[in-house]
Length: 307
Image 1 (spheres, rainbow, N blue to C red):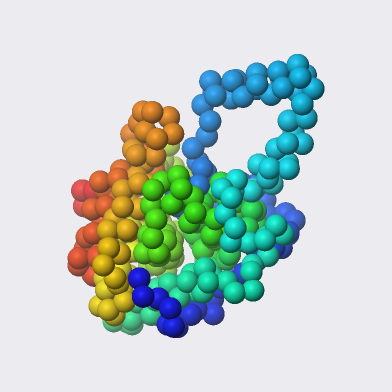
Image 2: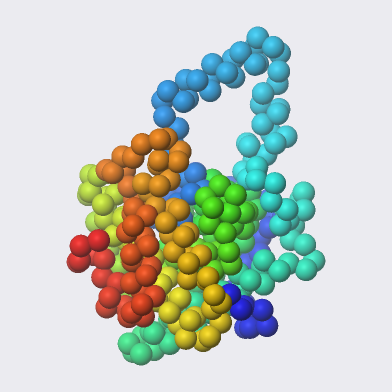
């Protein structure tokens, strides 16, 4: 992706290195997270019991201060544990922060794309803010952390991103490449587009009266539409002539690697379709590709068409 030297968005709030207090509980309140960070995929009861036994043996059988070791490793403070060196030990950004420049450039491209599309519909596009954080940070939807992964909060209309997730995509999910990273940002901006179009408010209201299974099924449709909207952005990016050979394949591979079925097979060895809330790998690839091929909002109606 030929992104260097292009316009960068001013709508970046760089909170890395800050340690604000508060922020409420874990991510909730209508936040829409990108899968893979660990949020929403709790440990099984069996796993919890095993971990508890290990803890007791180490703590009291061998006298090892397990809590102290966890704190030092960052496991209790939101550290990614990935060895990602984007920030120094304080979480502050480096002087020449190329990754921030990349994120700001991609965000600017989404602004240009959606401003034009909304204008063609007689509407006004309001740019979202994108918050860069490291470790943990409060949002209007709860506490953002490395475990939640990137997410969009409709309550404050902000995208939250710990850029360590990009390294996790590469190391754990085999989804490397700058266009794969750009897809993540475009997907979360896609949720902002849904918010402005009134889709998210209706969904958040409706799911209060849904069963968990039905809410998950509707969530899949919402997430697939955000993938399709990300594909529309990709189409406009292609038309600008800044995509390079292999870029589209990077995005499609990322969509493949973060499907609910693929993630569940990787983490627990089996799939539970009723728990899917982002869509299967095949669905995510299909809808990103549909948006990319079409470039039209009308072809992203996942709410009223088979997915």
